[in-house]
Length: 493
Image (cartoon, rainbow, N blue to C red; front, side, top):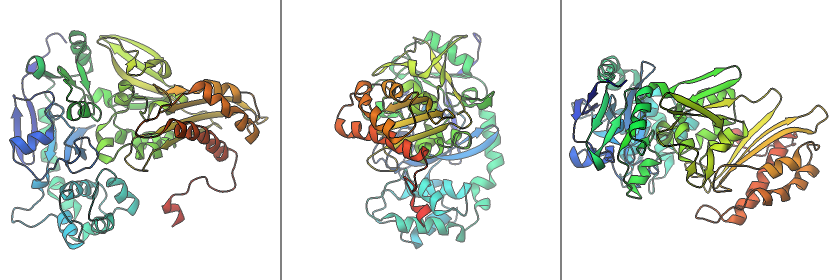
């Protein structure tokens, strides 16, 4: 790989125009490029943190040879991540004769807009939904709109518009579908297997050509900022004004997007996004489905990666606790050498992980739950959708034939400076009958495991009580409680 070819420009398609940029800063967002350099002001800045959805655009990319369009947050998506992609903004939707797009016309007719600031983002999210599901259910519509906030219209009118879009046109005849083969061919031609290097010092960015090339780049640039989905790094720039150069963008590396199963273990490449992992994980480990559905909105799930969630080491990251409870292993790579360790040992202290200079997370290996075992994940937040965790508990239980606890692994986020096992609680439960008396007797052990803090998301007292109650809930769900512990409004209906 020492003689790998390089180029000094980012190439992508913007609406119907071929773009080649040589003047790209590592921290330049797609939103700033669209508004400031291209005067495409339909894409709005609301929160600048991937929360409100006003900046939603579609990004088309080749995934396993298939062209996929997904809604993303332009406010935290960096230009450096767009090589070989097709960016579609709200301005691209209107027909050449000036007629509104079916999604836009439905929003007009069903009064889905009031002040209008959030409307372009809603339209783009509904556009992505319409292309993949022309006759969506209410649940699909609400999931598609989790990442879009409206302060004045209310959501019922927008939901009614979403239900009616196919009355205004056929998704199969939409230009993005009609031109799919041509766009896919263009994007394939842009993927020329070269490394991209642009700028120097504070303006330096690198897009590796492959995972092997990534290993070489990081050996040469051990202090570089690795950018996968940018759902965290984007906020480092927009909220904390941090320098991220040199930045190494890895979101386009197909080798890191592989997810597979062999001999009872799932291997998830570090670049697999939440959206890409959803179908695979929710089928094999059902508790992951509802959890992934509550990580951000669709835009965040389309960008954020499981590997990035691990590497970032946040104590409130959603995937480490369940992965730890299942006994997962993280695979780290430096150059051509790899090392593996239990995931729980990767997290050392707040903001500190066992990742050496020049090393990167390559994959995580997840053992499937054993037959007859019980596994559950519970996330506590202020609001149900698109909110950051206050505390999250994951429980993996195996019972002996006599009903005693053969083994149990419990892990929490939001209860300590890192994602952490509740080892004292586990010890208090091991070998005991799985009953209410055992559960209540084990609760004081939480004080040995955790000393949660008070912050804007929850008080220490609330976290401590919620953590204990999650064990109670797990017991009720696994002991055959007479009534459901939680019922969704769709089940009620």
